[in-house]
Amino acid sequence: MSNQHHFFNFSDKEVMTPHIKEMNGMFFRIHPVVDENSPGEKQSKEESISRGGDTANSTAVPFSDLIAEFSEEEQDVLYHRVRKTPGSDTFRLWLDQERIPSALFAMMIGKGGAGKKAIEDETKARIIFPDNRSQEQTKPIEIFSYDEVQLIVCRRRLLQSAQNARFKIPFTHFLCFPASSQSVHQSFQTFRNEVTKKCGGSRGFSPDLFQNYSKLHLTIGTLALFSQYEYGLAADGLTECFADGLWRELNEGPLHCRLKGLEIMNDDPSEVDVLYAKIEDPTGRLQQIADSVYEWFMEAEPRFLQDKFDHVDNVKLHVTLLNSRFRKGEEIGEEEVESVGGKSRSRKTFDATDILKHFGDYDFGTVHIKEIHVSQRFSSDSNGFYKATRKLVLDAEFFRSSETSSEQQQPFVHESYSDEPTCALDENLSEQ
Image 1: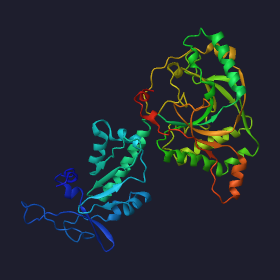
Image 2 (image 1 turned 45 degrees about the vertical axis):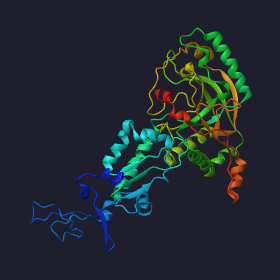
Image 3 (image 1 turned 90 degrees about the vertical axis):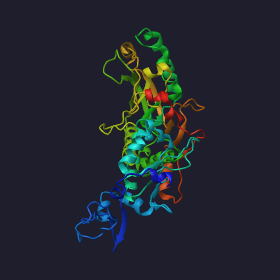
Image 4 (image 1 turned 180 degrees about the horizontal axis):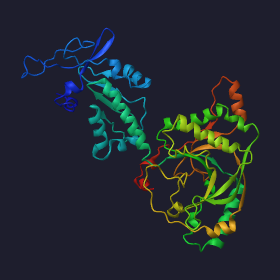
């Protein structure tokens, strides 16, 4: 007997995973029945396939009842993708179309294989995770069982496990508006020097708390992306947002915002982790774009978002200036947002009382917002900003012409660099 059959070597296999038989267009489970005249004998293989109880021992269940709880998508998988294993009683399903990233496999399998075993025990199916240590996922997860219905249940559990794993791994990317302006950069440098000179004696203050002036940005949301395929989906999402009409927000001219005034993320100025510049958006167009993009991801690709603030009316547009995480050189995309499920390191706060007192109304100047980036965490481009997996150029003329053109164009600049989100697998990140 092959190894795969040993997995199912339990005494009640015939009861728990019976064969399925078609009869007059209906599908039935085939269960063994007991010969009442020979109570000491083993169960016979008489088939109970009658409808409505024509025999006393009928245990047949219409196939339609078995899959009644399945979604249309799950039924489609059952009918079109489940395959009978040649020369065997097992059915198989490859999760190639689900595109589960190999970066999630370790967390799905669990310590000592506990996660994998729990799903196998629950669904009476066997799961094979491919060895994809080459960093490129060349093979999909494979599952097989004596009951094709259980394959669908197992698939559902694996998808749930993959989603849970995403929230245990710190985010890899973030959506943002780069705040790239020479005048703002110069103002920030001046601000840094003046704060250091006047407030350098404040408790917990250190010059390394300041953000790198080249990386100033307005964050829309944090993402967990693990493959070129997922990068593409994120880019498609941005395009779809604007193609659906959001581009009309660009019709009124270039997007500008002003960075003026300081604020903190908590209520106590003497115990601060994050100090940021407030955003003045007189037309409200920048806020509308940020909210629409975030809402699109919440509805269409919620698995990618790490910071699901569905109870907040608006994305909080701001530019982080100082962050206690920078004390140890731990640059991240959205510094004040904790990774969902991640462990938080103890953070040494700083006293921002004097900074707010002397610089509370500081004016950094105006920024022209030209692009939205899908930026990679823990990275630096040649210009000092975060490397962009994708850049969406905010060009009203492009979207306007796209509505009347039959040609499919993409308003994206694709950056050339290593896309592998190795930061997601860094053990140190689980402590953030």
